[in-house]
Amino acid sequence: MAKKVLKFGGTSVGTIERILHVAEIIKKEFVAGNEIIAIVSAMAGKTNALINQSKEISNNFNKQELDVLLASGEQVTTALLAGALIEKKVNAKSWLSWQIPILTEGENSNARIINMSIEEINKFLSKKGVVIIPGFQGISKNGQITTIGRGGSDATAVAVAKIFNADTCEIYTDVDGVYSTDPNKIPVAKKIEKISYDEMLELSSLGAKVMQSSAVQTAMMYSIPLEVKSTFTNRQGTKIFNQDNIDYTKSVTGVAYSKDDAKITLIGVEDKPGVAANIFEPLDKEQINVDMVIQNISSDQKTTDLTFTIKRDDLSTALKIIKKNNQIKYKTMSHDDKVSKVSIVGAGMVSTPGVTFRMFRGLAEENINILAISTSEIKLSVIINENNTLKAIKKLHTIFDLD
Ligand code: ADP
Ligand code: ASP
Ligand code: MG
Image (cartoon, rainbow, N blue to C red; front, side, top):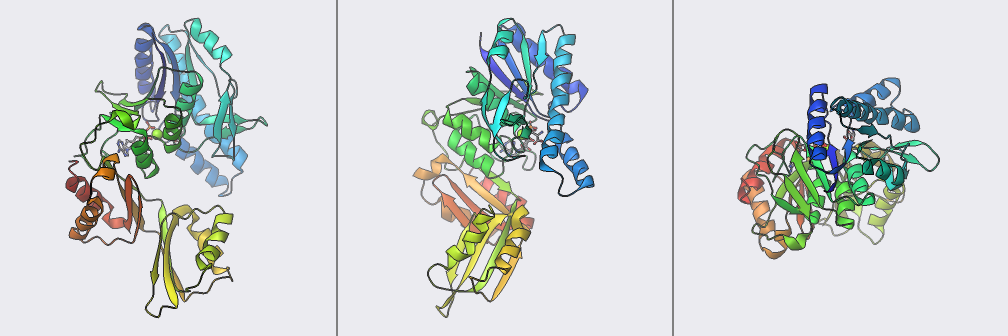
C-alpha cells in the first residue's frame, strides 16, 4: 500500500466525460489498496475565461476579488470529481483549501503555500476515504482567499505530497511525459525517461509549462520524486529526481522557449562607473526583473550601448521609468517586444566542450540573428526575433541529436 498524491491538470478534467475517466483512474488506484489524495485544476480554459470576465469589468479588477473569482474554477472540478467517485461507490470527499486550511503567504495571485493541517484528512484516509483537493488556491492568515500563480496546481500537489509525507506524487496531464521540447509544436520531440530536478527547473522556468517551476523547486528542495504521465494513455511517463542517479549520454537534454520577454536598448549611454546601477535601480524598486544584459563599448570610448531584457508585461512601465530617470543620459532608446527566448538545457553541457559554438553556428546557418545571450552551468538562452522561434527550436533539436 502506498500513499499517493495524484494531480490532474485542466485538460484531464476539461469535460464531464473526462472527469468520469479520472474517477476511474482514481478508483483503480484505490481498489489496489492505495491511499489517495487527488489534486485538481480548473477545467481547461476556465481560469483564462474568468480573467477575461474580470477584465470586462475593469483592467484593474480588485486583486482580492480576482483571487476569489479564480479559485472558483478549481472548486467546480473538485466537487464534480468527488461526486463522480461517490456515484462509483467510492467513499470520496472534497476539502476546499480554506476548509483544510492550506495556509499561504505573499501577495494576491502569487501567494506561496507555507503550511496545511493534516489531522482531519489523515483520519478520513485511514477510514478508507479518497480525498479531493482543489489546486491553485489557499487562504492567508487573515482569512482571505489566495491563488498561487498560473499553473499552480502542480505546486499544490508537491506541497501536499511533502506535508502528507506521500510515497509518490504523480502529475497526470495531456502529454505522456516531459519531452525534449514541446511535442505539440515539434512532433519529432522525444520523451525523456528520467530527468534531474535541476534540468526540469531550468526547462520549466524557460517556458516548458508541462511542470510549473515553483513546484519543481519545492520538489527539489525536499527530494520529492515526481512522475509526469498521461491521463489518456497507459504509456510510461517521465521520472523527475536527483541528478546523481542519471547517466548523461547527451550534452543537451531539452529545448525550451517562451514569448514573455521584451528587449530595451539604450544607445549612447555615458560610460562611467555607476551608470548601469542608475538605470537598473529604479526598475528594481518597481519589482521589474532584468534578465539578460549586454553592453558594448562604442567607438568613441566615451559612450556605451546597453541592451537588456525584461518581462513583456513590464515593458510599458519600464519605458516610463527610464524616460523619467534624470540620473542617466543617453542618445536614443528603442524597444522590441516581438522577441522570443530560446534555450538549450542539459546537465551534460558541463562536461561537453563546444556546445555554445554549435548553438551559435546552428542559428547562423538558419540566418537567425542573436539579440542577447545568457548562460548558466546547464543552460544557454538566446533572444531572437519572434518569427524565427520555430525554426530555431527545430534546428537546435536536430543539431543536438534530440530528434
Ligand atoms: P495541465 O493542464 O495538465 O497542467 P499544461 O498545459 O500546464 O497541462 O502542460 C502540458 C503542456 O505542456 C503540453 O500540452 C505541452 O504542449 C506543453 N509542453 C511544453 N513543453 C513541453 C515539454 N518539454 N514536454 C512536454 N510538454 C511540454
Ligand atoms: N487553473 C490554474 C491555471 O490555469 C491552475 C492550474 O491549472 O494549475 O493557471
Ligand atoms: Mg500545468
